[in-house]
Amino acid sequence: MKPNIITGQYVQISQTPASVWARIAGRLIDQIVLFTYTFMMIYLTDLADWSPETQTDWLMLFVAILPITFYTPAMEMMNNGRTIGKMAMRCRVVMADGSSPSIGALLMRWVMMPFDLYLTGGLGIFFIVFTKNQQRIGDLAAGTMVIKEGGYEQFSVSLDEFTHVSRNYTPHYPQAALLTQGQADVIERVIRTSSLERDGERIAALATKIRQTLDIQSNERSDIGFLYTLLHDYQYYLLEVV
Image 1 (spheres, helix red, strand yellow):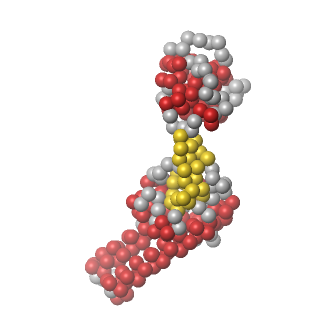
Image 2 (cartoon, one colour; image 1 turned 45 degrees about the vertical axis):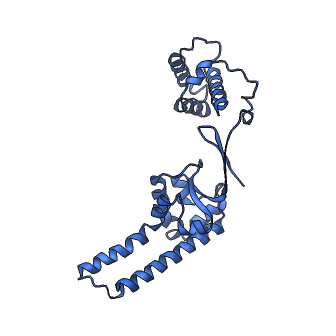
């Protein structure tokens, strides 16, 4: 199943979550890589004869442990959301909206890994199987998901994708073209989360502020109707450019 996501810039992203088996296989490959690295470090640096009284041995132990500890987040930061195991299984980490993961998101999913695997008896696998985008606990906390690289598509959304903004749609407010993406997001959020009975004052305050900012004199629509129309006009002008 490919979730279709429309970003704030009205670019549609279609991406396929990686299967639980692909993720398990990728994890096993990463464990083999780490085991091989550990074996080589023991063999090459004589860590088998490590002594707590020797400063050089402490340094070598630190050099050996550091890459093992930070392998996953470091690889994903440097390699576009991929570890060696993920590369082998053609998977990578992305944000749930399809964008590249931030450093904070990658660190969050790494910090949560013990809760997915070790401290909860593998509860993360249950989440991968039963969540919509096949996200483990760390993914849900970080807002990320693991996708199949061959199942990722990105393309611009046309006007025809919006039933309320067709090719023959006539904008009511030319000033809508002056809205910023942030302002449009605020309008959309208010429309989506507000109730006219409960949040009438909030809606009216936003509508008044926007009318003043964009110098719109018309009051022919209710405040909520005005916000709806203005947002539709904004989408029309933006998609015309796209």
